[in-house]
Length: 484
Image 1 (spheres, rainbow, N blue to C red):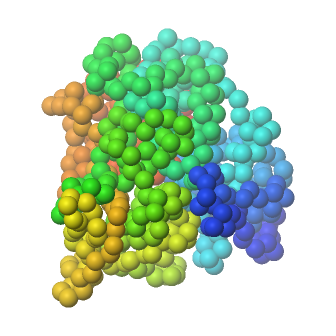
Image 2: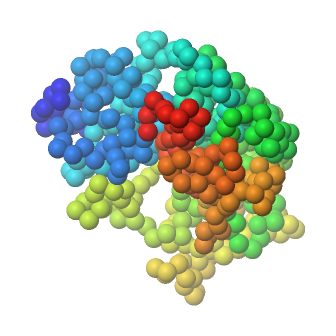
Image 3: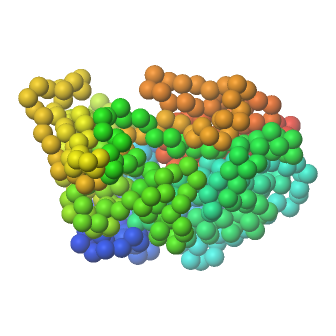
């Protein structure tokens, strides 16, 4: 490595945030970028590990060659660093912003609670590459004459489309919404990732010959059967958008909503779009001057918390049925895997009240309008403890307990009885395909991303899109040079 003793001499530093009192006044990103020398110092901390667990399989799903590009950054070779990073990850500016960084959990230095700031360095490489003009369209030099349709333009669909376009195929991407990006654009708030980064990649992909058809709901506006007839291959990357049913009494009260319509609406406002969206309720949902309760402990719940604060909520309470995790994990028991420990998101740090080991019993209201949330404490098996009931005042409540599969009113409805689906014990429904060839039960139809594996991380979607593109290219051409 460039500086063998860097991890001994340099302390871990990551990018700082604007103060909470400032950042809740806007929806822009609030991370304060580090200077190039500071980033290079952090890259220098990368050890000469015997086995770098950071890049898989326990660390990075796309197998980023993290030690290699850390060394290149340390040696001020930003162009080679972005080339190396792009060899495994089409969109490092996305993952550098929204990935929870399992690579850092797997870092050898995490045994001392001071992992290399991998996520910070990754984002810096992508941003520097744009600044210096290193990210340009890379159109194919030879065209195959094959035509591929991609349904859905989330991270899986975008990654697959870019790979297939660069392999020389004619690629058409069909997106239900008015702009590409899927839940990357409409689900993730702008304060976590501004959408100009998606726009830049879309422009790059258009320069590589990829055609985007937005405002087209496949299965409704255009039939899947028609796409199969008109293309040599079709890749279904529809995501996982149907909210999991909570089974809590009172969800019909005015003021109780699933999380995703709320986030989609606000993202559309920030993007200066009409809040009406296919598949989601269109009545305005706003948290200004309200007491808000968020049911759920994951990323989507946290995004609701941050959005509510920015809309002017008086108080935000987050309910998590899981017990409060320990402040520090037992390294020798869990490393290099993702550890269960107390984590506080930037949104939670803005003032959320967090209640752990609490079950939501009922939404209560008057005259059909929400007034409170009835809760109770639970034991280690999530069973209610008698006598612990309490009520939290609430004018607005969001259910953010996950997703159980793709929308069933478009592609799945058209292909009912033809497409093999898998339903697990929690009621999640995914399209069946393995993670080697990604082929479905229908000829010429492949699938990848959350619609196949269930709700997951952006980085997993990118990996699946890339692998599915390789499988399709190999099926069409008999061989492939696309990376696995």
